[in-house]
Length: 340
Image (cartoon, rainbow, N blue to C red; front, side):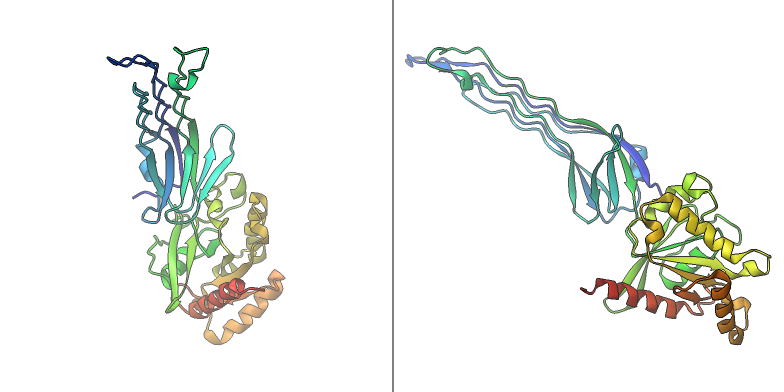
């Protein structure tokens, strides 16, 4: 199924039923009077997070959702039946916005979490409510109110502990394949990742974390260049960023420090505090160097990059160094979970 992380839908709640104008007329009952019942309430439209879904693709075909109208009141003070609600399943991690105001209505971050996005109208009052000592035969009833109508924008943001980012062809998808059961597309040309991938890294019994792989970033991604701009939002929920750097760039005459700054600048430009998120450098393709030379490579990179944070040298292709990286990530996440 094609990955879709944005959708627009229209939701219409049911109108409330009208109140009834009716009078009691029974043989041998000298005192009749008003007995019109109330209208039923209109049904509401709800969104419900479902962990069995991972894309908004279904909304390419179904974009309109309407709840049932409340039934009108009847004589003998009978209240009309309320309209049935409509529940629309969406993936966990769906952010819901009002398209007209851009207001965030809710964020469905857990399985089973529900959000009312269009409330049904209230049922109208029947004429039984308007009788009085001076008006014993009221011919007044109140119609039901209209249900809410909204145009909604749905945005799927992956729920992951760790986000992989970097320039195109840095080896993010290869790393995801190496450390999890996910099988993203891998090839030797840029932009093979066309949509975010998600994998679970299992360290041991009861010890695991989730990783999101987003398409490669290029300069100007935060302003719409390349494929990364639509998917930077998937990093918003992550707790740790792994910034992959392709060490093969040394042989291609590239400035690795400039490559690192390009990605860091896009995080700053995008906002949402991504630039302040903990970020580790993961230098990939260590298999290009003999094992005895690798410690020196790390030291040289630290100096040339001016980097004083965590830095790991790995080979996603062979798996070298990936176990130590995953162990360190797991420990960092567990340390963050501990109360201060």
